[in-house]
Image (tube, rainbow, N blue to C red; front, side):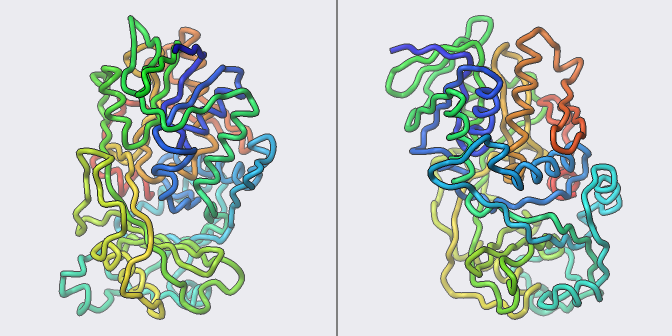
Length: 435
């Protein structure tokens, strides 16, 4: 059986569903295919769904700030409701603690340029405003097997900056479902439990074959396959023009009870703590979500096969992340058994996504989201739609990059920031992603 569309989107996580929604709203007949059972059932379901703004590029800050406005008016962004309910944006505020890993001067200057509200906090202000936090400086982060983690005292105190508009989305998988529902209102088709086994081209992209043998034809294909993006690119025979590459990384996020007093008026705030190598945020039910910031002392779990990984949280990572959080929150109780989720990120060399065309005409990518792009889902669809529309009309995005005007904040973003051919910053996790 063969079906024809204007565009095929491979992947229906929150980013793939956003791309499908934006293309369908732009008038394209779109089919999204995904190997999972429903929208957002893969990497999206393991996201901490944090909304923050600290990046060290204008594009990073502006995209996150624009997206925050879309999350705040989620029904307006979607153009309607969803029988399953709508994902909710909780504005909790967020504290980013200063460390040598951060370029706070650059970040705050970008906040000024973009219009992100913030406050400078010294250690005394942190203790006053967030009295449960211990303000000692322990940098660099240390492994739990290092005696210094347990025995060494603080070396001075930390400062930081507070962004009152930070927060989180309460149900990341529901957010993907909302985007799917909105895309369907514009006529988009979704096919689940549908794995792509071949990508076809003849001078340009022509379509794909699915595992059940059915064929989908289209002059445009967008790879948004998350940790499977590398395998899909191999099927398409692209990659020679890439200076940035991606690979799958296993990650864990854990949940414990928040200490008493952390969430007196709703979910407690987001705290980004690269001093200890962790981050945490409250939940609507009084819990605390705890994740890691990939400190150098921890070995990263790179995968050869994104489908072959331990699917449950491990004692080792649970202890590393939660004991670090407990160092910052001394009244936090650490249960003996881990509770949380394990997922797989599609990580780029510099931890910055690739939103771009490729050397194969008609074949585009939204990959390498690196665990930090959930917040930007509302704008990524707009980015890809602008690139696709321009390139399909003969524009050379490589030589004359497409710019996108953001509708809610008025900023204009140069999309070459997400080019597959950009120079690679070897320390992107520190300088580009965390600010």
